[in-house]
Image 1 (spheres, one colour):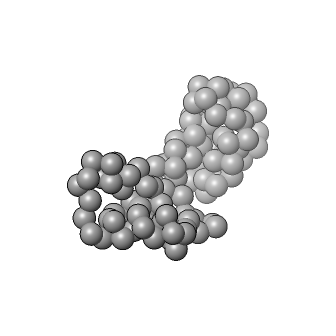
Image 2 (image 1 turned 90 degrees about the vertical axis):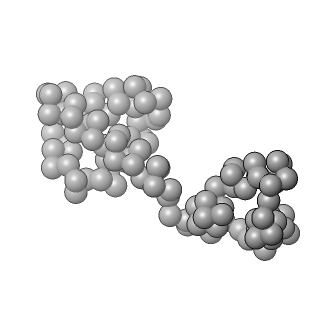
Length: 106
Protein backbone atom coordinates (compact mmCIF):
# COMPACT_ATOMS: atom_id res chain seq x y z
CA UNK A 1 0.00 0.00 0.00
CA UNK A 2 2.70 2.45 1.03
CA UNK A 3 4.73 1.65 -2.08
CA UNK A 4 1.76 2.46 -4.32
CA UNK A 5 0.69 5.67 -2.58
CA UNK A 6 3.98 7.14 -1.41
CA UNK A 7 6.51 5.96 -4.01
CA UNK A 8 4.14 5.19 -6.92
CA UNK A 9 5.60 1.72 -7.23
CA UNK A 10 2.62 -0.32 -8.39
CA UNK A 11 4.32 -3.73 -8.74
CA UNK A 12 3.27 -5.13 -5.31
CA UNK A 13 -0.28 -3.89 -5.82
CA UNK A 14 -0.47 -5.45 -9.29
CA UNK A 15 0.81 -8.76 -7.95
CA UNK A 16 -1.89 -8.83 -5.28
CA UNK A 17 -4.54 -7.91 -7.83
CA UNK A 18 -3.44 -10.72 -10.15
CA UNK A 19 -3.45 -13.29 -7.34
CA UNK A 20 -6.90 -12.15 -6.11
CA UNK A 21 -5.62 -11.51 -2.57
CA UNK A 22 -6.58 -7.85 -2.63
CA UNK A 23 -7.94 -5.92 0.28
CA UNK A 24 -10.79 -3.42 -0.20
CA UNK A 25 -8.37 -0.50 0.15
CA UNK A 26 -6.07 -1.99 -2.50
CA UNK A 27 -9.03 -2.43 -4.85
CA UNK A 28 -9.97 1.20 -4.24
CA UNK A 29 -6.44 2.39 -5.06
CA UNK A 30 -6.37 0.25 -8.21
CA UNK A 31 -9.70 1.68 -9.31
CA UNK A 32 -8.44 5.22 -8.68
CA UNK A 33 -5.34 4.57 -10.80
CA UNK A 34 -7.37 3.06 -13.64
CA UNK A 35 -9.86 5.94 -13.56
CA UNK A 36 -7.02 8.45 -13.56
CA UNK A 37 -7.93 9.91 -10.16
CA UNK A 38 -4.57 8.88 -8.68
CA UNK A 39 -1.57 10.09 -10.69
CA UNK A 40 2.14 10.37 -10.16
CA UNK A 41 3.16 13.90 -9.22
CA UNK A 42 5.29 15.72 -11.78
CA UNK A 43 8.28 16.23 -9.52
CA UNK A 44 8.16 13.31 -7.18
CA UNK A 45 10.89 12.54 -4.65
CA UNK A 46 13.22 9.75 -5.70
CA UNK A 47 12.84 6.45 -3.95
CA UNK A 48 15.43 5.73 -1.27
CA UNK A 49 17.09 3.08 -3.43
CA UNK A 50 17.63 5.63 -6.22
CA UNK A 51 19.13 8.14 -3.80
CA UNK A 52 21.48 5.53 -2.37
CA UNK A 53 22.52 4.50 -5.89
CA UNK A 54 23.57 8.09 -6.62
CA UNK A 55 25.54 8.26 -3.37
CA UNK A 56 27.24 4.99 -4.34
CA UNK A 57 28.22 6.36 -7.76
CA UNK A 58 29.65 9.54 -6.22
CA UNK A 59 31.49 7.51 -3.58
CA UNK A 60 32.99 5.29 -6.27
CA UNK A 61 34.33 8.35 -8.11
CA UNK A 62 35.68 9.81 -4.87
CA UNK A 63 37.45 6.54 -4.10
CA UNK A 64 39.00 6.39 -7.56
CA UNK A 65 40.18 9.99 -7.25
CA UNK A 66 41.78 9.21 -3.88
CA UNK A 67 43.78 6.50 -5.63
CA UNK A 68 45.08 9.10 -8.09
CA UNK A 69 42.74 8.63 -11.03
CA UNK A 70 41.88 11.93 -12.76
CA UNK A 71 38.26 13.05 -12.38
CA UNK A 72 37.18 12.49 -16.00
CA UNK A 73 38.78 9.04 -16.11
CA UNK A 74 37.18 8.13 -12.77
CA UNK A 75 33.75 9.20 -14.06
CA UNK A 76 34.20 7.14 -17.23
CA UNK A 77 35.40 4.09 -15.30
CA UNK A 78 32.54 4.23 -12.79
CA UNK A 79 29.99 4.72 -15.56
CA UNK A 80 31.32 1.70 -17.44
CA UNK A 81 31.51 -0.49 -14.32
CA UNK A 82 27.92 0.33 -13.35
CA UNK A 83 26.46 0.28 -16.86
CA UNK A 84 25.25 3.89 -16.71
CA UNK A 85 26.12 7.00 -18.71
CA UNK A 86 28.86 9.42 -17.71
CA UNK A 87 26.20 12.13 -17.35
CA UNK A 88 24.39 9.98 -14.77
CA UNK A 89 27.60 9.72 -12.76
CA UNK A 90 28.23 13.47 -13.14
CA UNK A 91 24.72 14.21 -11.89
CA UNK A 92 25.30 11.91 -8.91
CA UNK A 93 28.52 13.80 -8.12
CA UNK A 94 26.81 17.18 -8.40
CA UNK A 95 23.98 16.08 -6.08
CA UNK A 96 26.39 14.70 -3.47
CA UNK A 97 29.25 17.21 -3.71
CA UNK A 98 28.92 18.22 -0.05
CA UNK A 99 29.53 14.68 1.19
CA UNK A 100 32.87 14.14 -0.52
CA UNK A 101 35.46 16.93 -0.35
CA UNK A 102 37.70 15.41 -3.01
CA UNK A 103 35.04 15.54 -5.74
CA UNK A 104 35.99 19.11 -6.58
CA UNK A 105 37.67 19.24 -10.01
CA UNK A 106 41.33 18.34 -10.01
